[in-house]
Length: 89
Image (cartoon, rainbow, N blue to C red):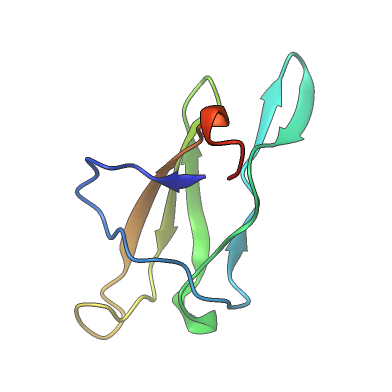
């Protein structure tokens, strides 16, 4: 998964933490992970507290209500889009 290039949300890179989303979509009736796990910026960010995926499973929005990027506990949402053309996620 890579950040959506035209997203209005935070597009900063991911840093290792304990908050994580694994982007599992149900495709043809089988749950499958697309791409690698997406880590939040910090353990206290609560990344993944809300997750929404489109019907085709190639775009996901991940909420982190404790993110401190703009203000203490301001939160943010990141939107990612999977591209199989890249050969990596």
